[in-house]
Image 1 (cartoon, rainbow, N blue to C red):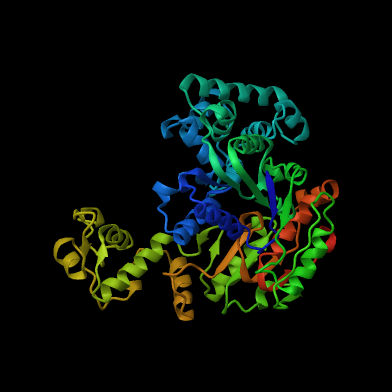
Image 2 (image 1 turned 60 degrees about the vertical axis):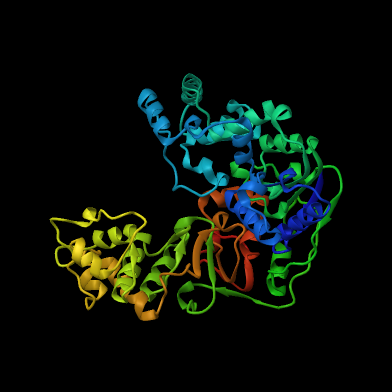
Length: 503
């Protein structure tokens, strides 16, 4: 197993695809090449780039360009109706009287899937990913529940899954490890991305794949290992025997930011020694006390904080100033609202819209826009059909006319939405485009980049405690944050320094 260390912006994915290119040139069928990523986003990006670069079909030619979970699901032979869902956890809850579905909002990839679980389920998942006993994980935790309660819930969940023939995402991995030698396909080339984020259980799969592959490369960057809370074992990646290559030039990080980042990485005690060069541009690092004076009118922006609540002030500033932005993957204008606005504009311009869009438009209309007694649900056209303003007026109860502005036609829009949308339109923001300003936690932004990056140095109480106990974790988190920068880095200094990270 050969390691490729890819510091920020050094072209790790491109390097891996170059290996794919060489293998294809040797005549190897693409079906005997695997590109395995840690997240669905990374797997999707690699597949899209491979299809475009090599002229391949995603479904037919690249069966093994996927996440480890997806690979396990495919090879183990599970079906979707065999997977645990929210309804199953609710049924267990009703039986045993414990909350099993609490937690944060749904995230896109498996990296953060355990965050959606209750504290007890998360602990159970971590013990399995780390290949440790549940009791030892319990002793390391600060759970408010007793060991008896935790053990009871673990037994109830296991029994429910067994009785109903159901599996969770961790079961997929465990089944793959058990059955792997029989079901794992022989591969000419296996590429494993973001290896620093693999858990001990996932490393077992990696070594299994290694035995079934002629050549295997695992790529990552131990300095960007920020998922230890989710069971990641970066030490395994660092200590792997065998050869290693370090990608030496960043195409993202400018010189001034690189200097700061190098200082941060030098604080990390457990790391693979590596140096890399910045890109030629100097860039800038500025320290500020408030983001309210930043000019967000030009360029792309990434605003990062250690905890989600810390970026609330920026969200308020952007809304007040009429900027369109994205927060944790969600646009500042709800998709239904922007769809209604854009669809109404198209109708006004004598263009057609599909049936689904027409229903969205109707949902924001009261009596002056559409006949209430008929309502938008009476649009019973072919779902593939396209409808004009004239057709909607003639056949589907539309009363609104082309000369009505959106505020008059879409009169069910809440007042707060109206005020914000007016501010957006005055600024000339385009709701039909992906927002160029993104707000996120540092963990949520891993893999992202922007010309302008704002980093809050404030720490939560838990992070401040962690800094004293396990400082490498926070060093890596803020290293990831600053290296998202392509040009200008703004560090927001807190007013009270007792609880901040020294950037």
